[in-house]
Amino acid sequence: MRLIVAVTGASGVIYCKRLLEVLKEKNVQVHLIISSASEKLIDHELETTKEELEQLANNTYAEDDFYSPLASGSFLVDGMIVIPCSTKTVAGIAHGYSENLILRAADVTIKEHRKLILVPRETPLNAIHLRNQLELAMQGVIILPAMPAFYHKPKKIDDLVDFIVGKILDAIGISHNLFERWSET
Image (cartoon, rainbow, N blue to C red; front, side, top):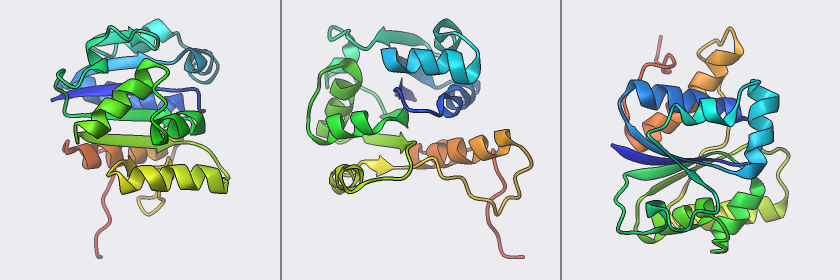
């Protein structure tokens, strides 16, 4: 499997890091785009460097690299995940404003009818945010907010993160055992 993973300037880069770790364990080929806005969050929230995150991917690209293969529909991928996805990025994708490689790759993913998963991490949402997400959902984009469940009785933050990463893996079609699934007892 080959995926594009993009990280934007919304809080929640811990989700991206964990997703990259799991994808690496599962030998998924990852093409990573890190926005310049997310670099400060990587340092602040994870107390790590952009380079350490890049080591979890097979290839990395600058957000202004329009000569990247990710900008073309002829570059075959199984899908794209934007995690976390800022409301600015949601708006850009919803309105076809492909000003950077993240937005262009998402646009290509939609036009090629490939799976696109956005993990917005913003609360509360206003009507503009909701309209943009609805527009994308009507195009077949999976809107997967970072909203963990509690039925699996999480004990630590990692359990909450694993729940969201597990839901992403479910949506993209990768098996896992990151959380205990709901079952009748």
